[in-house]
Length: 247
Image 1: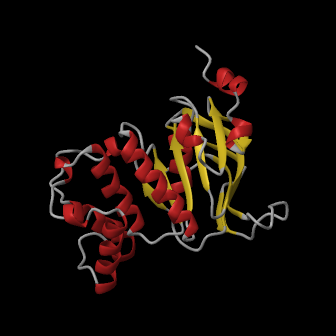
Image 2: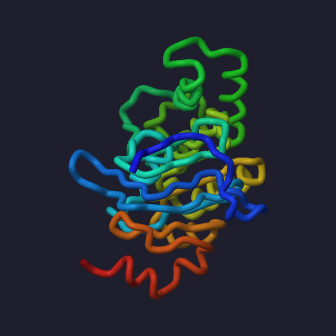
């Protein structure tokens, strides 16, 4: 099947109160000769939080990478109704502790998509960076090295980088993994507020507590879609037992 990346109007079957921001069908993707996603078809509602849930190796990060545009699918259709490129926040461990970057420099990298790397930032760019630092309450950490921060502080810096892109679609890969309860709650509150401000949020997670607070859920198993819908309907005891069954 030919892969298409274009903008389209929401599907006629989408509920009028929650139109689709993204929808895809027959999506396949992988690495080299190893397939990961196998014929995934789903719809991501606009102005909502959607979680991608599943055990390690189920395809969560790969699907998120495809939606972010950093992984090209081998086949399938992917349509986006948004006007802006997505902002992608990778796993905290994907950013090296030894990189000589301050928090401000890390957040400024979020403007590279508009300005290009290493080019002088404009007044508008600086305003976007300052706004993201303030939104994540890390302005006082701006001059600190990224590697000096706690896990929660570092995660907030990476999310601020995503916010600095000023996109209407925010993609996050395991944003609360390894954080203490207070840090998880802080990030959860922020994501809820972003949706209220007009941002569609998609996050990959294996944290079922986080997943159950989302608006919608995609449950993945071995690169296939095992369930889609409201978390309380998808994340049932029987479904979880089937997906997480011992190999």
